[in-house]
Length: 249
Image (cartoon, rainbow, N blue to C red; front, side, top):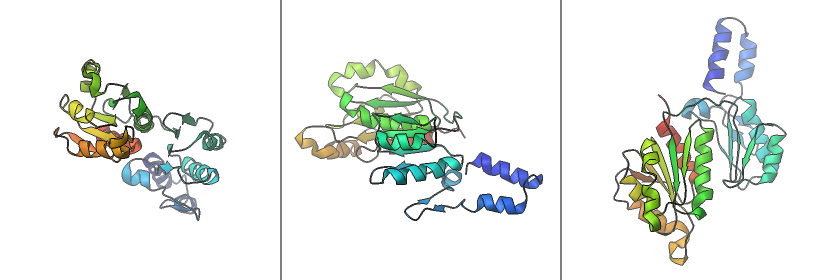
């Protein structure tokens, strides 16, 4: 249930357009809805400002489809992460307006397109190979009501490419920087701007990158004070946090 739909229900009760029995029926599943294999948290948008996000990895198509249908039925927007096109076709039978973001491996179904950000969020990738994780962040931020600036393939091996984008970087209220290898790019970006920089290490890189561990440790040791770090390949988490930072008060 969205804050707007709850306010409307309360007003309808006050104006006697809805009786108490009907109101109780609508509120029965508000804390959560038990599907046996999942407990869909319909209260999360009221608590945290955005509905429950479905991680598709490890779930069957049937489970993802049913959870998605229950979230959409409550009037909330939907984000499903780490899924393939088969799940998308299933969800599209419930929500014709659903979109599949192939590179990000995500599904979104946005019912409420209210602009919720104070300004743009910039999503920056060091290399082209980092774009799938960067797209996960960008799609998340967009679905949460933000405008997103994409600045891709501007790694430190060719620093002039990043410097050419300084104007776009400085226009952003939060910046997500995605990089593998040694993970140097977030520190450089952090030294150019006065906003939070959310660093995302990726598992992209040669042998000594240790599946993203080298980038993670490099980012955690950043000398730029405005850099914070999420887990390896966690573009979704970075996009979510950037959206909360950018949210209108």
